[in-house]
Image 1: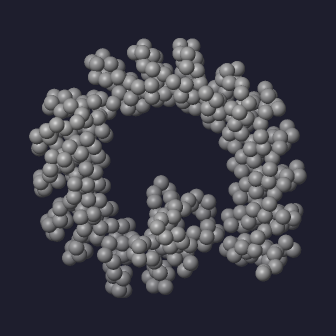
Image 2 (image 1 turned 135 degrees about the horizontal axis):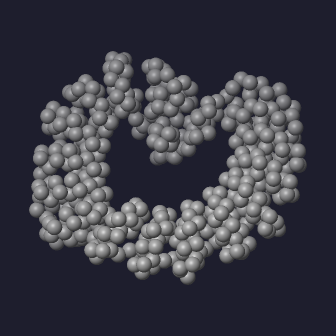
Length: 481
């Protein structure tokens, strides 16, 4: 646990919990000490792990043991994390134990925890904390910090509040601070680009238009017309309207000559609807092979047929590859007569197998059984697609050691057994990865039926006693050097 608190990813990977396979580490500044990982659509820093950020099996009271808090100075402290998660009672308890930090009030500002802020009312607040509160729309925090600390924000506060659509924050900042013409221009651009009409109106009402301001880009017709009415030069991003799928707005833009589209718009339309594609085609919008490629990837057969019949640009090999990877059998069947080069065909087969689309794999092999690589079977095994693996083996398709190694890594015991019966090759990586992932049944099978063995480091990766006993009792256990 101490090694885990010190930020050693190897220790974290070895923990026998089901979420371990979902972690992805990103090194920051000092490898091995400070790192970030992505979990449940948010970033978690190494210094936060002890605060129950990942799993209920890491109780908060463990953080009270100072020997487990040997955090690097650059990482968030225990108090910062307590403030971030709004645990006021925990924050008070840790403060009483002597923990200190220069960061907690900033974390509380960023996350809008007013109870922690009231407790820290005598602490100083940085401009960054104020800016972060504005960026996240915590206007109550701004009012509190302005009243108690007389803190003001940097231009970043106004810029981000406008971009993120926090109208109440923008109004508060405009009322309580003075801003330069440049600050207003940047904020206006940010709000206009995201289509925040009320904020654009507020900025224009509070401040005169900056002199010689370049045209403002926006994806909103309402914002565009507001800017033009105020004599602010504006450009309507019709491509963005197309990508958003708002057919009525695109029709309105063309009917009133508010803007035109680029060839990228047709590609975006191919992902949206046939009506959008037909409209752009009537308007004479340029097209590229990427449009058919996009339609194929989206499984939009009607759009694909229309573009093939009405346009001459065609598609690339990516069309059939992407359709196969997504499992769009009807699209693959339609494209097959038009895309017969070996490179695209082989990659389509590989992708379909790796994603587990058995019907696509069967269709492709029924038409051209002599094309393909070992990547198909390797990918299917790694992905745990037993039906695809069984079919490819029955067809005599080749594989490499990556197939069995990958299946072991994923804990796919049935596939490991099937590949072993078929005489597939493997390396020590098969056992090593299964040990790291905690796949006890896979490890037991490989130890009993394979001879590749495992590395000396693998024993250190075995976190459960059952795994350790299994390894040390095996005749394949390497002797320590």
